[in-house]
Amino acid sequence: MMKTFRVMTFNIRFDKPEEGDRSWDVRKPLVAEAIRQCHPHILGLQEATWRQIRDLKNLLPDYIFCLKGRVWDDTCQYPTLAYRSSDLQCLENGEFWLSTTPSVHRSKDWGSAFPRMLSYATFQFIEDGDGQDREFLVGVTHLDNKSERARLRQANIIVDWFKEQDYPGIVMGDFNEVPDGDVYKALCSSFFVDTWKELGFPEDESAITHHDFRGSPDVGRLDWILVTHHFMVLNGEIVRFNQEGTYPSDHFPYYVDVALKEVDSGT
Image (cartoon, rainbow, N blue to C red; front, side):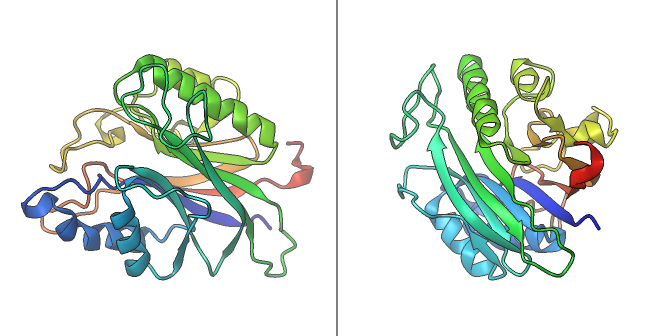
């Protein structure tokens, strides 16, 4: 029997000093509640600062955050993975910078406005008697918001790295482009599958994930979950959760339900 699990990507907006309902102190319980309501097995965050990660660790005790080996820096916004410890075990995790010197903290190249990173983890379901103990790899990233050249180089690094790992793979995040440019082609022309398109969802206003805290979509589908051919894509939703018009972030989270295909299915 295939095991279905939910993966969610969520740009939570960094801890920018602001007043009113955009401040982190107001938003953090809403971010946690949006996650609880969606109940993902694996969560990928973008723009998370150390303070935000610390707060969410306290608010989401059912989740373990993949933080091993991280160099903490108050100036950084970290792509970060978390997972439900009741269902999954993390076999390995790590991260590297999307630059020519990936092991150098905060390194950036090609005119990237900010240092950009891929955080990754290898997971396996806790054995429950169904015999499915296959490992799979999940990454979360946030590509540059200014430089098209940097975004493309960053995307190519991600594809090449996943190919080298030779695992069933998922990558998610804020790619800072709508899905019709060179970054999308680099990721999806021959390696990853776009879960939104796989589900047959339209590229219209319902697909837009950025809304600047107003709830009215305003940029495009910037937040993607991409999978290798090893996965079946079963369901998905862009989540417009809010409490009386107060939104947890300037991006809507997006989740999909997927399942690893059977090994003998020819894939």
